[in-house]
Length: 40
Length: 397
Image (cartoon, rainbow over all chains, first blue to last red; front, top):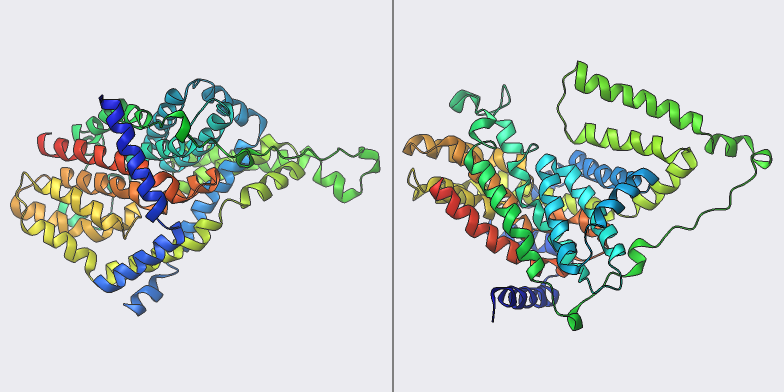
């Protein structure tokens, strides 16, 4: 497997993960608000 | 913490309005015939999916290096034009948009870099400690331009190499660039006085000329520098001029207005997060922790990492410098580290984790009609690669 194939496989893997687990940007902001609240 | 959030919630209203205008005026301008022709000409340079993805990245690197606001909107619109050009040729649209966004990694080492420009501005809030630091020691020093050059050469290739095989390709949805229907033109003799005014070029011409005279005054008499306000002003006046009639301009503005809802709704949340981070001392705690185990050699690197972490919560570049700058500068002076390198550590770190932070991607996503989840996977690769490159260069340069 060449370098380009490695990049393609990694890109696809990250992309699939993000599509499954990353919420809408507004929800993302709300979750960050919550994390900051807890950390603070 | 609830009070900090509530108090901070509306602190980015002016900035949010500027961002909405960046998006709207850029969009209005792109709908004019001359600008559409420029975008079309550049987009034609890409005739394969590999070239298309690489081109979007290169253009963002170059334009956001010149000015981040201009880069963000210009490359967003170019990405749409490329997608339009490549329809049916197997271009993976989410990767194209991710690649365009990845070029934004260099903005904080360019001509509109907040932290480096701020420390070179008379009366900046750390002047009594560090004086003025010329840009020759920050953005025009090796730690400013070498990472930019390395990313310019390598990042477009890395993004393009991730292009999936044919069966996994998701092409652009034609609704993204649905052509607006031309309204049938009325005979001027049958127009009401109001309609005649809306379709007269005279009013647009007078307003645009007044505006452009101010632009001349701003740059050549007042000696002002390119900032968001003047950029928006230029785009707005050129939009009025090039659309010809007020009616054409209004129709373009209505269309452009549809793209700004994400910014309007989400920026207040980030302002609330910034309020909590800054007023609770959380940002300072993170910066202090990294500074506590740094040496003169490693401080710029740890500054970069801590800036990357803090940027997830305080995505505004200038805002981040005001929180992190004083702590890192104190640490640098205490252990004899290079202050300009620490400034660039904050700058690079601030831009770095934008790859996994939707804040700056919102304008691009609005134009592209995609969700953050569609591009973030690919942006993670840009994050990893730029993280490796910049970390090494911060240690060796």
